[in-house]
Amino acid sequence: MRNYLDFYINGAWVAPVQPRPLDVINPATEQVAGRISLGQAADVDRAVEAARRAFIRFGRSSKAERLDLLDAVIAAFQARQQDMADAVREEMGAPTALAVGAHVPFALAHFLTARQLLVDFDPDVAMGTTRLTKEPIGVVAMITPWNWPLNQIACKVAPALAVGCTMVLKPSEVAPFSGHIFAEVMHAAGVPAGVFNLVHGDGPTVGAALSSHPHVDMVSFTGSTRAGVEVARNAASTVKRVHQELGGKSANIILEDADFAASVRKGVEAMMVNSGQSCNAPSRMLLPARRMAEARDIARAAIAAQKVGAPTEDVHLGPVVSDVQWNRIQALIEKGIAEGATLVAGGPGKPEGLNQGYYVRPTVFADVDNQMTIAREEIFGPVLVMIGYDDEEQAIEIANDTPYGLAGYVQSGDLERGRAVAARIRAGQVALNYAPLDLAAPFGGYKQSGNGREWGEHAFHEFMEVKAVLGYNAA
Image (cartoon, rainbow, N blue to C red; front, side, top):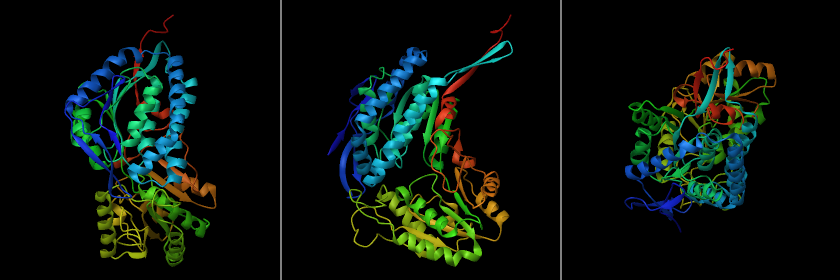
């Protein structure tokens, strides 16, 4: 059993001010997998003070020093990849193939990308006689979720480190193991004391203390829109920058000229990745209404090929992360049935033979109206809704009829047509014909999906302030 009871503050592992152990549950077994300590405001004060002191030096570090540091972090990360994959599998139920093939490599890729971009990154721009320069914003509080625990840590830490910020990380208390190992990686890499700090804890205590702290210059938060609103409220009194990557209910528009069978099948498969626990999942499939019956048959066959089981086995879907999440998903599946959607596959309860663990039956609803609860709310589980449209204009209207705007998907046999539809989707990132992720491209949302952008060079700018020096270039 893992015992991660200390916090990483000012380059050392230290005991919490007041011990408050929390059991961490393995969602595949419903058994205790380890313990962490829940921090409190006094622990946050220690970590923020360490970061504040470290910023005096690190905020003025050279690009060469930070490139060397990123190299050291990458090497230390690579040495712990298997440990991290094991932790992700244990803490949030990701199947081994997904943990090894996506969770860990994506996190590493954020550091590789940041390192590559930093080589040519120039924070200074001449504007007549004025010089515009960008400087690290200072101390950053990072609050990360349980669904892609390592990825969300790395996509914040890598750019912040690259531009010279110091930081305090609060990983999700639901899936904290990989974050703890990440702190061990930072220590092994020789990150200067105070530059990176970790305090375990819950949102109402540690999260609130971080977001309201007067010596924190920025909060970078990933999580639900509801929690994001609370973070913004807590941060308002100190007028700090708040960067948020929040929920989504992304539309996947399958146009008339797309390869219909392949598009529907791939859409079902994409929705089921990570047991549907991805903020950018293509959770609303929009397709020609006249082909709904055909789509139901394709989706039913696609679901039949999705194997659910223990994360240690060769499966597509493991459990969802917790009993709280399982119960919420079940309630929404029941709501879909009650509101009259057609249940194509899956449904309430656990898959046959999986009585222990928070397993959900991969579920597809057809004949869904966009005003139904299952079309409006982010389910955050392996549940796909299929919505019919009469023409392209209606498809775009339905896609944009959501409070969210994180991602969108367009499938078309005509690339120009796909581009034209993508241009009208109100979302921060749109993928054409199931294009693969580009970790150098900005990631973030419109509307209630957040503000600001992560990934690539755009992330650098999120962690920087702009200073104008007038007369700098005077003759």
